[in-house]
Image 1 (cartoon, protein in one colour):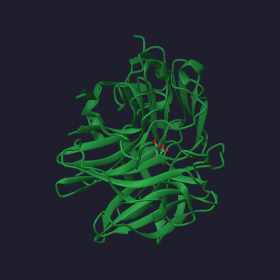
Image 2: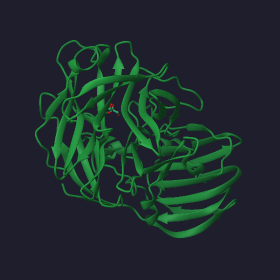
Image 3: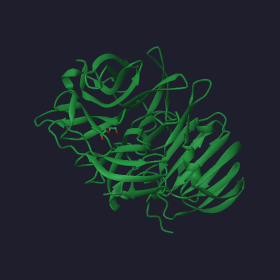
Image 4: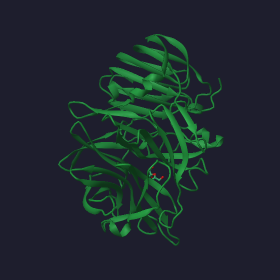
Length: 446
Ligand code: FRU
């Protein structure tokens, strides 16, 4: 069947542009996913709003449409990224109101307002009036006008907020504020690191099994063969006594940025990212069809004994599996998108989708490589250094692929645009199970 590029497993807008996941939380019995949304334009121009989906089970979703608009002087140029914080029967949403002043400005050192704004909601979509909590004058003097993307949590009897920032010296950093009432915030400290770019976006600080992490999306890193291959990066530090160590990228593929995490009611930490990046040198052919970009699958985060984060698709997605069939080395099978392949590996492997793309692991080098440009739309190859590949899970949607390696130690994600929804899959060096997948359900209220 000809591929219309409409995703079956990934959240994407019917029309317009989506970028970062925002306001992720579990509130009143439902998961809530807000997102950066440009309803008027698939290229991301025009009004930047927040859209909203909610779900009781991460499988059946309801879109309540656009819930926050840039309709005040303090956010007139965009309801930028932010977070959700649940307290009692209220959801507090914190975001950055982006303001661009008229005049001759570079919009880095002057001309831009970056306001932390609070709205509250009792049902997830009807919002209170907006209240400004922090303005540029409240940030440390060393900061440029680029300060944004609040993430709030409660710990040790106080509320905490991290904000991503760029200093006037073009050094990326995170600003940490504290509050006793969620409204009055005091600057506490700054986190930064050497040679980690000029701007850190979308910070997220959290603990899993007693191990502390800081996630950031830094811009301006040096690109290497195995590291920071994309225009902008995204990864996490281990935090020990305020020290940041072992920056590890979340995803080694082409399309991943600005993730956010939240805690599910059963204690799992779940992460969603934008399955896209700004300012990319490749394209997405859905722009001509009226929409662009999607979010990643929700991923469960766990931590190994030696403090490494593992990412795996949330277990709820297993309920979409059907028609399991064995797949072994040397097999070539036809399968329809979307599908899920879970396999053990012994030595070098290759999993190939027609002439669309292949995942190859040879020695300590793994790569996700497009085999023709109409499927990659400018994407070529991304590498991961993996000394021993033991297992692999590939979830292929109609217009994307996520490869989870070694129990989720490494993930590689990419948008892909095969002409047909039926794929010929060939496998070498693996043995496991191939499942067809039902899609998630998305109902739209708009
Ligand atoms: C990350 C980002 C955020 C900002 C938002 C605007 O992709 O640049 O820093 O708040 O997107 O859409």
